[in-house]
Image (cartoon, rainbow, N blue to C red):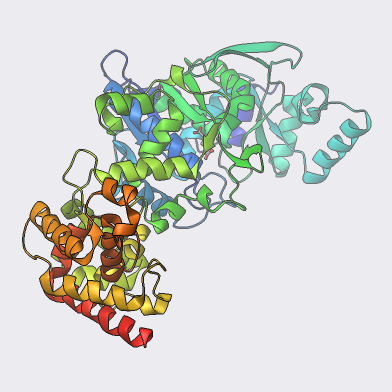
Length: 558
Ligand code: GLU
């Protein structure tokens, strides 16, 4: 009689370690009650998806909030899909969001006592448990070729049964050990499958921290646990890792809910306690009124790099993601007067279930709010580093005179309701270019957009007066009083009420007078506080602009 032990030895002769040795190599963690051990476990198959950032961020928050551990594991057992360098890129991008694991795969290398943290380097560990299952008769070798599997599928299709390697269709689960031995010794290629005890007509119940109790059809597929390349599948690898790395909360995308019964069955077969689960909602997008998943192909915002390239501060995106995670976060920010999500008690129980909807306008809103609280000196370094990569001309302007840009960024900041001009670094150049002489577009290029009720000769004489007599280097009240006086002399009504009552008595209102001035100085009808603008431009440049307008409008009037 050939026993299971003999088959296990024939299949995995090199595997000498025992489960007990591994259990003691990776002991239980001693952490305070209620501390979560969470992980982010990306497959290095491409760029960092916005949904993955969401998952990583929340796993990180949960660990930090509870005084636990967040680790990063690279799930690269699907070697055909692995893209070289993408794991490194991924962790660097996460680091830009301040998501740095306590242990695992880190930008500076591996750290932690539960490694290696790259699955492709844990081959021997998985085999120890595959061997254990083989010995216990809970796993078996399958010698099916691709053609054999195709044949099984064809039979299943013809008889309209659920496809897959299960029950009566699991051809090689019925082999005797004698038959197995012959095939192994003959050198037939094999994979190892788990022998499922499940029945898809029955339900298995598990508790999801977000969704509550879920009843899902049991697994009855004999899933592959060890592939022909000697590496495990995701199903098996992550169960072994989450056990040995002592994860107590598996937070991952909701696309894994249907496979959870397989994972539960594996935990049970291995005699391990199952972790808690939280299946996070997928990020959706409203597309012509229909909700759909963010698509890697169609939506640029599916890639985290899009936001970095546009120049959203990472912090803004995180604030926004927290607002999708917990709808009470926004209310909290108002109550606390803070956007510091680190202080917010994020709760899995308060997650929305019907798919988080990505809304660029909302991100813009949060980002503007956030940047409105930053002073120029804090904005300069991230602005410059963004500009160096994405807008060289802007970078040169900032580097040439950082304090000039700092002053611009500080306009109307020092007040309870600060200006909200910028949502992203790419907003800075268009909003600030008029401060730079070489970028300032004189109004003649725009066809003199002054109020047509004024003749150009009138405009030019008003501007000339301002250029000569406006006060410089004084505070706003004094400057404004001066402008008012000039305006009144020129025939503008200095009180709106007067102008409304007797428009015929005046050339216009103070608003009109200021608009002419603003247009000549900033090139636009709307601008930040004109007094601050003039103070930054300085007397010489302001006069130059005004006199240029005087000359050009005179010339044009002739
Ligand atoms: N490697 C899996 C993925 O990228 C991870 C799922 C999990 O977190 O368990 O989807």
